[in-house]
Length: 596
Image (cartoon, rainbow, N blue to C red):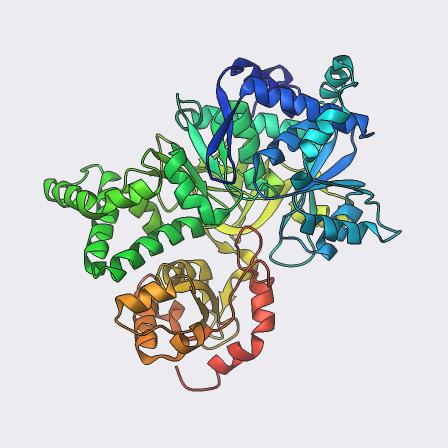
């Protein structure tokens, strides 16, 4: 791992400034107005706006090293404010836009945040309720919707360029760039400390490995993952420093139409988005009485992608059937994704081999990746030239990985966090002889490709002593269009079972496709035809595992799992511990009501 200082920019804002100066007359950022019409900012315009806002922060008294929080959806102002704070020498501390007052209170108190920039009046009310506590360090609340970008620019007009240039050069490689609080599936969020070098080193390595994706002429993507999440934050920095055109989508409900007008070359998403696109396409086909054709086409796509990964390649017959499937069905899905997408990167949770090959057969090169906030969000990713679907790829430059005796993946290197903020005990507990213990179980093959099989804490050990990784079954069952979420259970029990929630959005189309009347989720959960199809879905999922690992019983919950009710993290991961606790009675009933 070469880490010679002269190879890298001194800090994040200087790295981004260099890119924007090079692209002064070319579009780097795009955003929509209330009519969903795209507007462009060139590199020169973006840099001028960042400079003006940074001067505004300086005029407001923001000091070098001061923590300032940002709480907003993914919009272009987020990036402008983020880079402006770095330019002013400050440490941006993201807060999820879905956070409660108590979560805002915890982060601002732990990180000693006195100023927060929020998006809406609702966010402002929450922040002001926290600031009202005399023990809170929070004092200043700025609101994007109230025009804070223009306001800051106006306030900073008298700050000289010399002061701005002094501030932007203050941070060095070893200085903290940010504190990112893990959304966490269990316990109180911990503040992960990441340095400027972690980002600039990571950016150079990612650009080297993904050059065709990021640096090709016309490279572009729609960014909709919440920028409070470590992966989206890293992606933001890499894209800004690469000159990849970013289109911002604050409202995920508008994602599909915005993909159609933006036409990105790269898709960045969590697996649930790829699942939703697939399930929605299947539901549309079912509503039109063409579900069998869709499933046939999906099989051709998957078989074609798998065959392309072999030395012999697809047979002439498979090429012909795939071409027909593409013309009849698959091309429509490509159009939904904007028509120009060639690359896709999936992270934050396992995508699954089936979906990887499905999209691969559409001509979309899906590169699944892996990482945790503590290693700056991405440690592994498949490459444009070498991909193994079903794995999360090889280690990125600047990092090392190995598997411990129990299968836990350990990592160390340039992107490793400096520790948890004000929590030395948690930092020490996360390290094993200088290696960060990820908590994930996996294998590394002879070519260095990592496969994650599950979380160490989530491995289920049945009463018979069988170790079961729930992710495989959960992925398979979520693939069924009617299923929204699935939690496999059975720790210390005689067999494996599952808690399932229905997808309320997909339900009307599914019912129509089965010639069934309109029903509520509760009515559908009890309907014999729905149960019959769910039984079949469970049977199909069970084909991926042994008899001892298979789901014997399941329960359909009427409760939705969402970020708002606390069952999903903001990155849409199920909070397993919360589900197991809150539905303990329902789980127990699975093992006491009748024999499996």
